[in-house]
Structures are given as C-alpha cells and as structure tokens.
Length: 180
Image 1 (tube, rainbow, N blue to C red):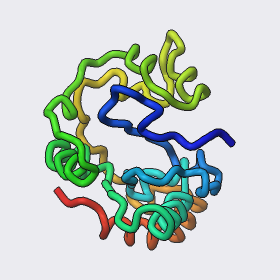
Image 2: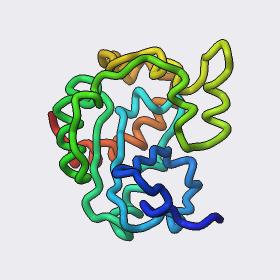
Image 3: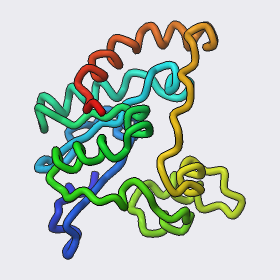
Image 4: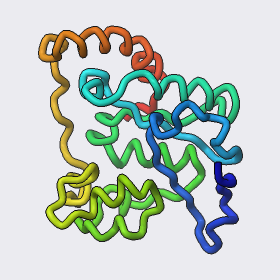
C-alpha cells in the first residue's frame, strides 16, 4: 500500500477531487485517507445492476462509521436533470466555490491526460478509436438528458433477483441524497 494522499501533495491546488468506484477499493476501506469530505454518486439499481451491485453501500457504511458521518450523496439522474442545483449543493457541502463552468465544458478527449487515476481505466480511454469507459463524457460538453429507467421485467431473471437484493440499499441511500 502506498502512503495516504493529502492536500499538501498538490501544492498550488485549491481543490482535490478524487473519483473512484467502490469495487476499486476491494473492501480495503482502511486505506481511505481521513481529513476529506466524501461524496457518493448513486444510480437506480435497474440501471447499474448489469455492472455492479452492493459494494457501494458497504463503503458508505464504512465512511459513515469511520471517516465522515454525513457524506454527500447524489443520485445520477438528479445530477443529469438538475446539474446546477445539485452541483451548487455539492460545492457548498464540500466547501468549494460553485462555477457555471461545472455544468458546461469543451468536449475534449485530451483532458484525460491531466487526470490522475487508474492507468488501466485511463489508457483504455485514450485509444485512437475511442470506445472507452468515459467516451460519452469526452464527446459531451454538458450533462446529457436522463435515460429511462428500465422496468424490472426488462431485466434478465438473475438481474431481477440482484435488483431485489440491492433495492433496499439503494432506497436507504436515495433518501439521504441531495434533492434538486
């Protein structure tokens, strides 16, 4: 394990934003450095289950018990539908200034070259023909409209069962989210 990151590791920077996914921590929550605000972007289970399940709720419980009793929770559909409202609340909650530049930006795949992150994820996105994990984000210049939530009956049987198991966790987190 490497050393914990601190704001001092980035001299001249006023804001340090780290985006990760719960599965990337592999339940090694004790490696999360203290002293930062923590935020969670949640998605409706019917939208996310084809790829991930319960790990985010376990991470939320760890953060609440050990690092930040009131982490920020944002639902992805709320963010897409009301980016200005949600981002204003986010900025206020974490103590950084809000700017309209957070809701519109130039579409540019090269911005990822300035990001710090998983080499595997970033390299996969820098392929000439695109198609990487963040490809839609790189082609956009604003938040895109919300996509329809699939019906439970649209999911395969195994995902319906997983959704049934995951929904109570999502619903608890959804009640704690910022509201537009």
